[in-house]
Image 1: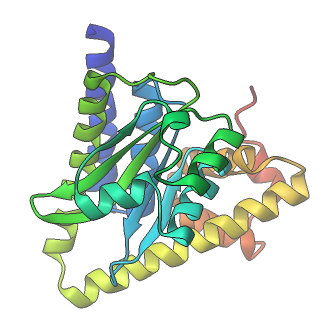
Image 2: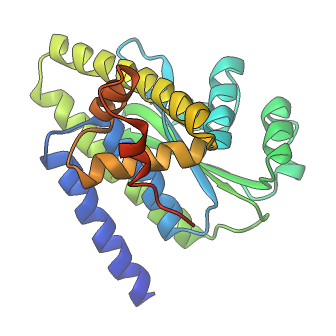
Length: 245
């Protein structure tokens, strides 16, 4: 437990840094899903965030498979993340084989990707709900109540940061910021697909290379992605920062 406490402290410090230094919703939400998988017995994570019109958008994921699962929930208007967002309550399904009747399309697709458990945690502050965090497990009954509490604490921490940033800005600035974040997400997906195709990588490896380059050079992921799409950065430059397994 002491080891995880230290890891949790380190994770919170990283998230604080994301908030303090040139706040970027895309980077903060990506930090949240990555940290959740690092600290908890979850194998993947995804995050939906409401835009200025209250419509949920996929803002972060730890893999292409989880990104598509989150998109499925948005498109079908059904799934644990949607339920957590709408109700403001945690949604824990320890074994999806026993919960398929709630969201049959989601459960079937999750099973195809090898996931057998899911936990959706609302991003909430009092009565304000701004999104939801989805934790996926390849084993049933993998997440205990302590894990859920830590996951909710991480989600709450990120929520406070996002809501605080919104309060500090006027409504027009908030809308502009959210629209810019959504546009950034589109550019990131374009750059990821371009890099994956031209370098013959899978989508996750391409995203990992882009993100590591952005971190190593102290740049925003969105700025790196836009430069890649505009061919202002050579593919080889990005690939040189790729983490090889």
